[in-house]
Length: 210
Image (cartoon, rainbow, N blue to C red; front, side, top):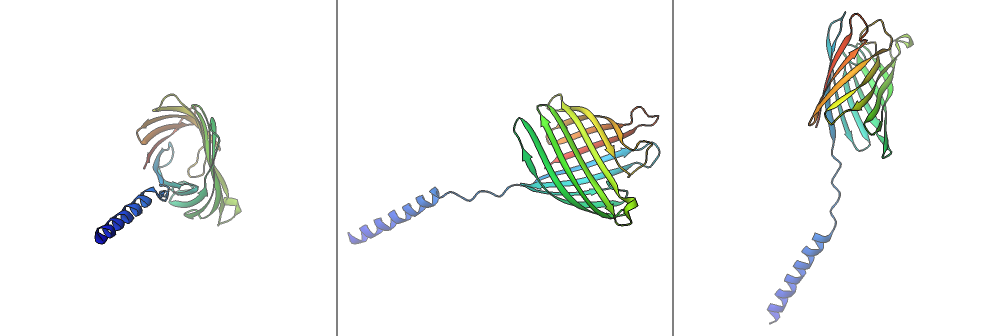
């Protein structure tokens, strides 16, 4: 009898420990990375065409980014930033960043990304100011901004402006329109800059989320 009672007590203790373990809340899973790979192909009227790839990774507040051919040909840049997000009906996302530029152009660049959205309208912008290591005369302000309307889940229409010195045009600030298509985790956007010029610039952008 004592042996049976002892076995029963041991079994009860085991079941109690298992039940307590099952009821103990597990540690929250670490936040997943959000990764986007993108590439823009520039078709230029008076210069050689080129591709501008970029890779973006976000995890909670942390923002990491790498670009090539953005600040100049054969030039790369690496970025780190901090994500802020505000609002519900009207949302505002802001990411201040700092980056290093190296290659044909070298320097340091503070910058930011922002997005302001309300219903089907969104204003987005990414800008930076490059302090060129060769001298202050080569410092430059880059910007790419869009105002877009989502006509549906797969169609986006809007306007775009940019300022760059990666290639030269007669316009200091280029402006144009955009047409974007989305399918699952991929999006394809056509940009036409300076549509009233004799030779507009066309940019084809492709991005995929992982």
